[in-house]
Length: 119
Image 1 (cartoon, rainbow, N blue to C red):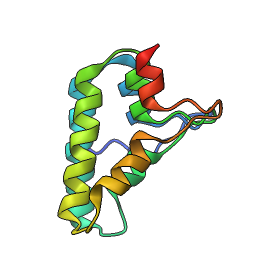
Image 2 (cartoon, rainbow, N blue to C red):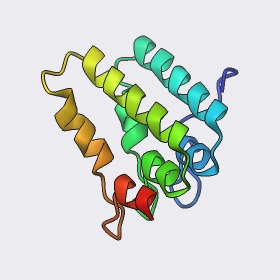
Image 3 (cartoon, helix red, strand yellow):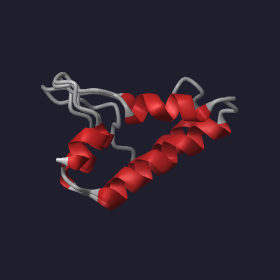
Image 4 (tube, rainbow, N blue to C red):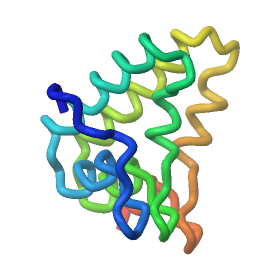
């Protein structure tokens, strides 16, 4: 990640690096991706950290849902914290409304991250 890996890479099922790392519980990799996206966002205003968090694979699964479904609580916390920090620093008047969009995002079966984590 630090050497410039392509964070926009998608596999044949539209799985991002962040979704894969979150699903597999690779906390250090998730942290590295978050830091790299923050740095990229500072350099290029067209890049938005929330785009990475809201990205869905072919099944509609986000990184947050992937982490929650596997019980990776630390990653869930890091993704939510990074999202809220990004929303707050963007000066949004209601960051919790946008955060709820991330947390309440449904996959193709209607499952949210909270529901996936409760199973």
